[in-house]
Amino acid sequence: MLAVAAFAGLANPGPARAASPAERTRTVEYFPGPGAEPRQVTVPVAAPAAGSAARGPLAPAGTGPQVRPLQHTGPVSGRLDLVVTGDGYTADEQDEFAADAEEKLDAVFGVEPYRSYRGLFNIWLVNAVSRVSGVSGDPTADDVKDTALGSSFFCDGLERLLCVDTDAVTRYAALAPDADIVFVVAHSAKYGGAGYSATDLPPAAPFHGVATMSSGNERSYLIGAHELGHSIGGLADEYQYPGYGAYPYAEEPAAANLTLHRDPDRAKWHRWAGVQDPTGSVVGTYEGGGYYETGIHRPTGTSLMRSLESTEFNVVGREAMIDGFYADADALTSSVPTGRPVRANRPITVRLAPLTGLADLRLTWYVDGRRIPWAAGARSVTPHALGVRGHDHRVTATVTDRTTALRDPAARDRAANSLTWAVR
Image (cartoon, rainbow, N blue to C red):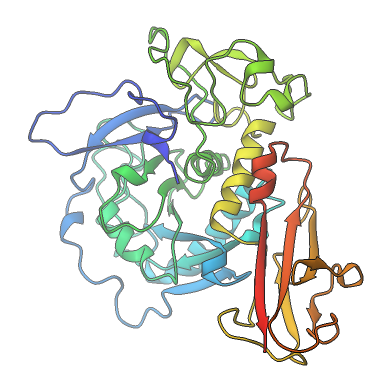
């Protein structure tokens, strides 16, 4: 997975303040306002709030279960596991945290392609009990609260930059059965957030990225939606910095949504050229992106990867996101182990992820590579019913996603997975 500061194959992620040689820093993505273009900034690694570096146990005794599934659609080995934890919620406010988290997640998963592919996610809520309610920097910079995750506005002097103690976040996220992505919901009505890449997280962090957002602002969910674009889809930022100049590299950027080519028919998204996009643009090549003003092009005039004023990914971004979903998740799973033979009369039951909308799953069964037409779509079969007689045969179930949101043949191939059983 690629993420925030290292996602696009850019040698320089953008303007950031200089650090002294002895100062450890991390690069985060900063969202100065609900409709503003994000920025990359560098902040100290030191814990953002007083006392956060010496936090005690994960939660006071007697506060109840610390982990609860909000959505469990399949085994962690076959799903993207999203962990959501709150900060600035006391023991008596954990139900409020759960309600706030669910509201934010419903908003994020209202954006395509999250909406259609929500069934590829497990979602875990992790209680982080704070001693006090609220977070540092709300309402003013000198308002410091010692909370479980050290969430703090005015991080490095930027009011809307909402930093966290990433060591504490890592400890809490580890309580979940698995963690691919982490959201931190800060108990505040103040707008703010941040995005941390995998390269700027503690070495012990097993996940791809962290997004922070305030609980009480109705547009802060877009921060999470944008950050997943980096950590799941490997998407680059499509905005640029005034005065930052021309893209200085000869190599084509790795990200799916940036190209050196001015001609749309030569762009990596040439299959989408001329399509009317959900962002309101026609897909083409629009100059500027990846922080540079000229010499590099993006697919549409705007999108969620350019500005939070937009609430949609463009079709190029949607394709990259779906490809990213399937890189970490499988639409087809089964509780029948594939590692040992099955008997000919043993039912083989499979499960398809509950996908909707853009997704178009097709299930096919094979015996020794030969398709069995009548079994198409069947969720439970026996080898005997499929025509298996005798020993040394193989039964395979394959699911393919024929969504029209994927035009790249390689991405279409990756949107399929199979399970095979030897028949004893």
